[in-house]
Length: 401
View 1 (cartoon, rainbow, N blue to C red):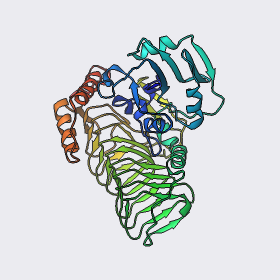
View 2 (view 1 turned 90 degrees about the vertical axis):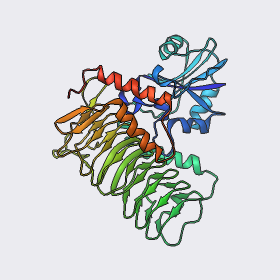
View 3 (view 1 turned 180 degrees about the vertical axis):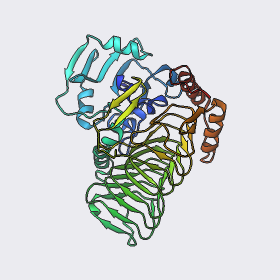
């Protein structure tokens, strides 16, 4: 069978992160949604997503295709149920479509897929499911995801030895991959949740960490950092200061002092020294955030919600973000005061003085940052970002100079 991970309607409520990736490539827990499914399925997956994303995330269609909802957290029970689907059947849980099995003709558009599955035989899944429905679910479900991923990844394996120059509580819940470097004076408390430290990571002197926590490959925790669970430091990310219940996707930096909590940071972001992000209103009221899809503020139902920043966005030193701030893709924020609680993609400036970040300049900055890691933007990625840029410029959120 050929496995394809599809986007459902909730992708619209996972912006700004789904501007530049399918839902399946969102990181929540130790793994991305795709990486988790690929541990339960025989083989690799491809993607059925928005047309402008398909160049970066190709679709590989076969004769016997199983379509799986990329927003649903994979587990063994669901994988077994999917394996039992016959051609022309779909697996559902309430109103959530989990998977469908269809043969030829091949499908290359989301709307065609949803048309094809209408009316086919539905099989109810009897177990519980978890799925990403709103952008804040990424940090809200991170505790659950780290715990389940930890069990999946470490089952039947033995951790590398714990260095005798660090302090650890709950050693049975700590897993260190071979090749991790943990320096003197670090304190790890795994009594409240598991701590996973991948290979090629660096945990510098005096870092203090509480689980559930995941430090992915080539992640760096700076000296004296204070990291509370449930937090994920994605591959290649460098963090310092104080962090609580945050998810870093990959290759992003918060290297200096400052607070970040109940937050999601995309790929290739950089938070300047002493950036501080509020995650609680002074009156303890429920937090509203801007829904780019609905074009209005929506209630999260949460008391704690911090910064949600899309790929390739940056902020200067001493930046202050208000509670529940949404920053789009490829923004450059600097200056005094609080920026608006919604900063559209390709914005340049600060509080009360925002202009359009010109596309070529934004791509130059992105290329320079990636070049420091020996990587570069592909032509397909540039076209993807150009599409986002043009959509923002043509929308009612267009910024005037």
